Length: 230
Image (cartoon, rainbow, N blue to C red; front, side):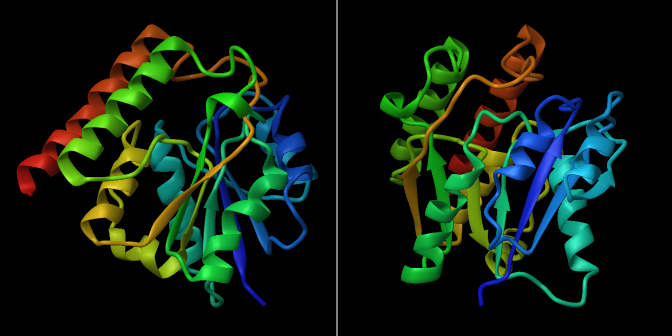
């Protein structure tokens, strides 16, 4: 039986987090919600919904993901697959089964849930998000011959392959760092189209000018850093 754990970074997602946890398939062995300094009821709502709740006081998406990984590293039984999922209910957690299928059935290493236009609710992604995804994936195609079309946060990866990536980004560059390192280490990967809806609440990245700028700088910084290393 494949052992699967889900890591959900969450900052003030009290209104959405229980919905996310409830829709995760029962085949998942543990749901880990990492509260990234939340000031609302995110933690209690996640715990009441059945998740393991961790607290990461350092603000940053990567910090939260690394906290979840550290927790798993200290467990006796290690998972086969890690799934990363946002806590805002913009993804459809029930589609996790689609994401892990290529790993379980075809022995692929890494799967990205691609937020394709035809499956995306109107307004679910902002203009800067759409442009940023296009720019980042176009540059990865030019520099590394990558076939990525999205930096979607809904993703699944073999646990041992994730460890080998030695992830380090603490903030907005987490997703692109993972994809660049997967390319560098020649992981086998595929994108699976997923549905995407308007999130509950306000985005902490695309919903602010500051967040969008910092995310863009981080993402482009990682791409150019790796293009120089080629």
